[in-house]
Length: 225
Image 1 (spheres, helix red, strand yellow):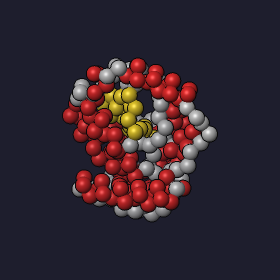
Image 2 (cartoon, rainbow, N blue to C red):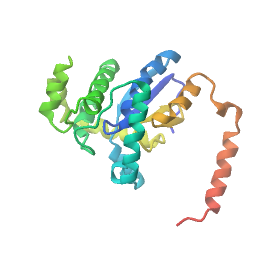
Image 3 (cartoon, rainbow, N blue to C red):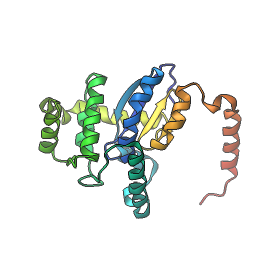
Image 4 (cartoon, helix red, strand yellow):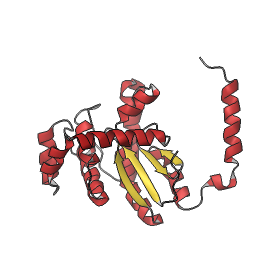
């Protein structure tokens, strides 16, 4: 895994994720509260599924039914709008490549906020480039250069690099938040992320190395299929 002493939260996300939308509502304030930089890094969720040989939640009927109810409950508790998307699952490549282009991080954050709201509040069709163009323009974002750049080799290669980097750092799903070597997964991990940001991580009082070595022994002795 990459090691860094930077005070930075790397937010690996895909617009297809309910929980990415929810987590993004809290992360900017968390980062600001503890003096951390927040980077929004688009990745393709399907790349994780392929890497680890998994099915997505939308392909497991009881899981997606539970997730839909669970995320509505979270949104209501947060007091934020949350609606069923226009279609799901969907191909997120257009939105991801829009967001993977070279731009200032403040611009990427604004674009991320706009497109997440488009998918999870305003029923934006994420596969319709004309609809996306109109939506961005209506929200004060100049869509034309972004739409044009989304089909560039650079945008495609950068998205692949983002996915490779996330996997190399231990990411396995979306959203993933990484601070240094520590990986936090999903909206429900935000309280534990905050303990780290606040220098109150319980790992500081634990023999993490010994604990993980014991797990290696347990896995070696385990009865696998």
